[in-house]
Amino acid sequence: MAEQAGPLVFVQFYLDCLSHASYLVGDRTTGRAVVVDPQRDVNEYLAAAERHGLTVERVVETHVHADFLSGHLELAERTGARISYGSAGAVDFDTDPLPDGARIDLGAVELEVLHTPGHTPESICLVVRERAGDAVPYGVLTGDTLFIGDVGRPDLVAAAGRSAAEMARALYRSTRTLLTLPDATRVYPAHGAGSSCGKSLSTELSSTIGEQRRTNYALADLTEEEFVAAVTDGQLAAPAYFAFTSARNRQDRAVLDEDTPVPSLAPDAFRAARAAGATVLDTRDPDAFAAAHLPAAVNIPLGGRFAELAGQVLDARQDIVLCGDPDSAREVRNRLARIGFDRVLGALAGPVESLGAAQLAGVERLGAAELADRLADTGRDFVLLDVRGRGEVRELGTVPGARLVPLPELLSRIPELAAGQPVVVLCAGGNRSSVAASVLRARGFDTVDLRGGFAAWHGEVARLTEPEPDGVPE
Image 1 (cartoon, rainbow, N blue to C red):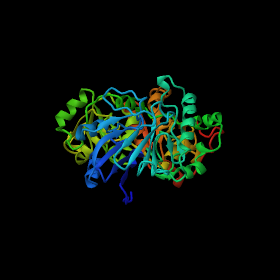
Image 2: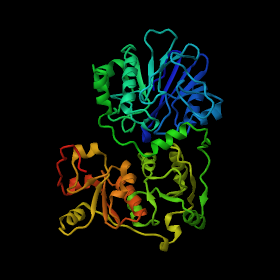
Image 3: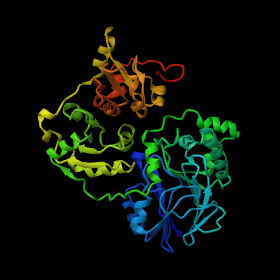
Image 4: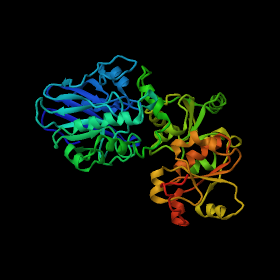
């Protein structure tokens, strides 16, 4: 973010692995600042505040988040900052609620609170003015109300008795309130492309009200009913961890110390934790995992959208022990903590091989040509699962005979698989398939996956099926 010349200090932080944007807004003339929608590991906000000569005196949450565990309690403990939600927010710890129209005075810099329910009942946006009374605001922090190219999904609070259509109607009114801001007002959302909080988010991290008015499908000249139909159609299943993380964000929970080392477990202690029921999480790459791993271990390679994948297939209520690179244990623990998975007991002190060869097993990964041979066998007896998203399959097609079970749906759809039937899993490039295959093996299935995924199949075999009339095979 470019340095501002006036009193305003405005810094956007972006966490690629969760497609999450958060903000530091301060006044350099007074040294007062707020942090908006922070991630749980908060060192970078404190470092940025110190760099700009600011003191964080308030943490503002635009809503109760579902896709990550926010760092409001961590920042409050380390700075004494007050925590604020919109006044419709209900949480289990002390807050300083913000009514609609409230002004947060940082000196010359001012933030105006707009209540914008729709994604959640308590959603707010924050209009940032470099000087109180400016006719054209510097920008608006839109949380999950308005994204670049999309709006927040309205279906995440169904469990609380609010229908998607009801919330979409509120979202229609909220977005039209945002459209009363001047076209030059910058738009800064809480998420970008890849987030499951919407369905077609842009890779751009900011825009303007005018640009969104022209290009965002949800801000077109729609009636309320047309808007409701547009934003409720085509929403994918929310990742399983969303309900858990949303609940944790309301709780007065333990804070994370991101600098604390992860306990190092000798082989005997590691085996004891595993015997007591801890999930073994192996974070090595899929080929290393396939060569030798502990039976029933779950393989989630460290990198990319690691925490999101973990949230889709692990149980947050279960203890976890780590194996892989011991030097990465703290990173693994912190990335799991970002979604509220806090039950990491420790990490194996050495490489997986330190457990002894007798404790380990290998597993087959199929090449594309091998899968083609199996598919050509008229007597084959296995089910082929494609764990990519529906949009990926709709765009690219899939392998003949594959059944689509997107990874976020895998745990809930395991009962569809016949016990004892062999399973072959594929994804785009081979990471998600290794995750899914390891999850199924941990539940007793005879499972292998396609090395290189659909990309390898397309490149080596190139026999694609056309999507079904509804867009995806089932």
